[in-house]
Image (tube, rainbow, N blue to C red):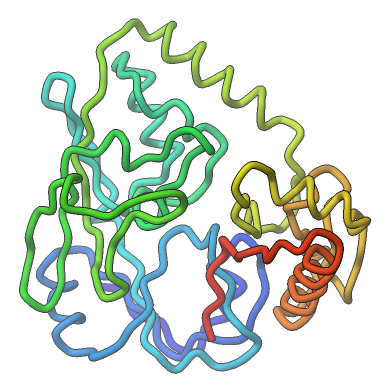
Length: 278
């Protein structure tokens, strides 16, 4: 197990901002992970860091990030099992290589499988939880498997408790040709090609019913609006871009300003999709 002290949180998130993490642990086995969970009453789980922002402060709670021992994938006919530390990009490559269809919509969604399950990542029509058979979790009571039917998942939530650590999942997929999977992945990628590059956490806000957060922000005149090193993207208004100098305070001030402007203009309260940790 690797351990880190006083590390910059910007190194562990795609938004590249925040203060320092006092203690970060990378367990490689389920036994090491169980030991950490038993030792700590409270902790922060970190995946690929694509949907999380740490505040400009010292994060005193221990942070746990699953190591390479949880970065695995295997197949049993049309079912696959993958560890929670597996990047979504590697899972898609595996599915493409083996002609397994059902998760192509994850194309261009960064992060790890554990994080994707926790927030039910996907599109407005389909989330990763829709393909799940069961999820392997670990808590103070040990390891157990939760069937999808026992999880109250929905739009941008997998229905897991905050103290639950996802360590893997089984998915039910469909055998097709490799070319069919490749074509489906490319189709989803094509839809995402207009998304902005640079340091960001992807979509900042959940889409309200019957509309999109990006459209509301654009119609509120916020495209290009800047606070410090944080800017509302000109390409997609639901993205905040860090130009490399933004503090988390800049980003949070911009989030508050966006919410205020949308509330004033449309009477709609935007809800953050990104998690703020401090």
